Image (cartoon, rainbow over all chains, first blue to last red):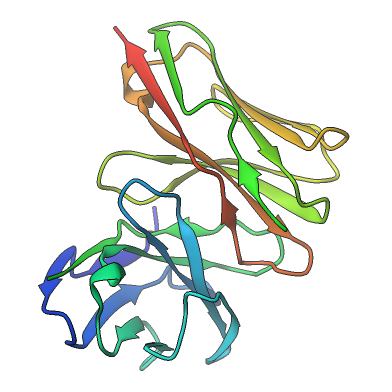
Length: 114
Length: 113
């Protein structure tokens, strides 16, 4: 069964450092997403991406965050200058269409900022 | 504002029992609802979905019921197994905000052998 894959599974970084989280969405999917889950809390939407541009973003997704699809398979989330409160599990997700279509999640990248 | 919440944070059942997990939502524009299962350290796993033009949908051992009048969603798991133990989240997606899922708080389901 096709799946969304993410790397790294766990990353520890120092406050102020840049982090790039990588994702390979399901191959025929056209819509890509990043969500995050702070430990013990619910999953929160960060950003959606279609046709090489952001289609929607939440208030969490401020100027320190950026997304990119550098080639035909990868989808990345960059955090420019990490803060302690960025520590969370970051989930990449993808769907074939946007309208009421199943969104499949990856296993997540656990980011710890120290 | 939009919100999706759960009535019960934990549910313990015996193996073989049926489980019912509930979810309330407040956004009347919600158009599409999904139940996800999340095991420890893993990503949300799709279980079943339902669109707002339906009130019931069945899958393998799972049924989702939607009551738009009271904005309530439930997930029924038949013959619950220890492998069903996980956190279950409902999520909703509005007509004007497809792809932006709003997740509920989650219910911890524990199945005792």
